[in-house]
Amino acid sequence: MATVSFRYIVDDVDAAIDFYCRHLGFEEQQHPAPTFAMLARGDLRLALNAPGGPGGGGQAMPDGTLPAPGGWNRFTIEVSDLAGTAESLRSAGVRFRNDIVTGVGGKQVLVEDPSGNPVELFEPIRAEARLDGS
Figure 1 (cartoon, rainbow, N blue to C red):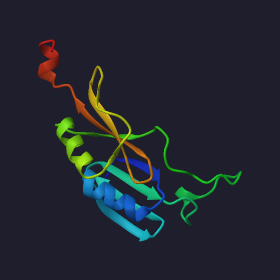
Figure 2: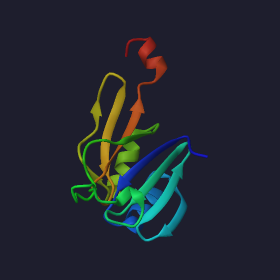
Figure 3: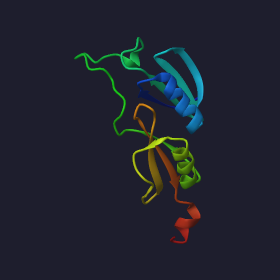
Figure 4: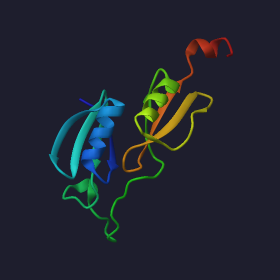
């Protein structure tokens, strides 16, 4: 059972299921309605909702504003070879928000799901590299 849950609003639940399962290693757990699905990847559970659907996750706010995809909040998937993973995803036509950047803890890049929600792919600095100063 997943221990961390995250919800994304998506324009097309079926397209999002395909993206996350085919490119990022998620497995479909539930898809009881066209406007909702639940996916899992290890301890991460990802709820997908279409805006305005009958479920709670896609409901309008009190002022009538509908939830929408996009933004900058994201979850992170750790990978062992960021350059290779990015190359494979680019070849498959996945959209990127940026090129690989290096920070103090490792390297990262942002990919977008079909609705424009960001997912961070992260390759941490190896412990042995930190110990020897490289």
